[in-house]
Image 1 (cartoon, rainbow, N blue to C red):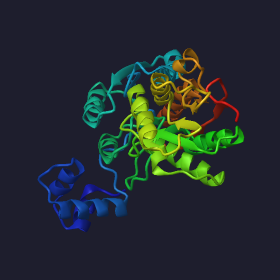
Image 2: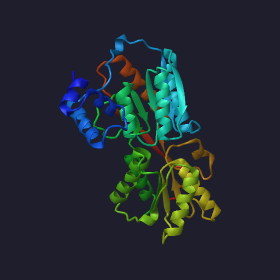
Image 3: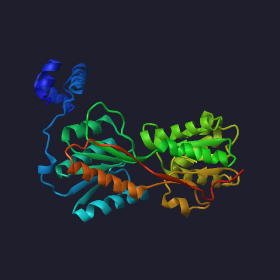
Image 4: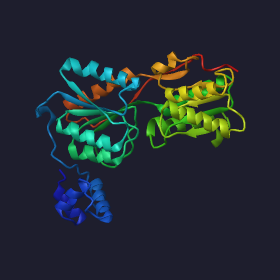
Length: 339
């Protein structure tokens, strides 16, 4: 087993310097930090004691971190989690982060102090600070609705998500088959690797596969996924596009509702003049008129699967984590017109 002494000797630094690098101290120079991190990666060193899971005492607590607990998508995921863990005597400790990194790290520390067995979390993106925290604290984390980026440190992390790129690509094909050739896109931030970047890439992939043309005037990337962002995104396309699209593909239902609000305020009929689609099949999708064509992903089952993966980690000393893809379904409703 590689020890901290091995890292220190290979890097030509003291053990205390290695410790400060692992704990992200600002007292270490960038060059030294990079050198130590390179050695850690080369040797495959994992700081902290390795616990035998079968011998550890369980306190039956699981941490759950969500950016917005009022979002019914996360509510359904939580129901799925509880359906698995509650009958086994586990309790969940729920934290709301607003998608802010400082709050995420703060609540991760809070959950560690509460001695939770593991953590299930959803967030806008996965920064290296998360990976370093997990590596330091030896806590299993399951990400939901997000893909795990390629980090160079070995960590016990899993993810449960749908194939966002292919789902949006399928929606482009659906609109193409409905006669649409001028399809716009309103998305979220690209630093969100899943709902932001992958859904944008899915739009571009679908455009290419259908041999369609697009331009920056037909693409609006917003800072978030709110109704207000959808309104602003549709306004941007309306102001910049020389020819209005026949359809607008939105990265989530909230954005789609905002786009429809803008068109209502500007006497643009949906779907008479422009068709609109979303993603998530949230409660809003069937509450608004016209009802929203959208992509339903298995949110309850996502919670179930994330809880099952965490329990698998608890029971197996060899579990290394996995990326699990959930099914999705395209639902045609009133907001898309056949041309």
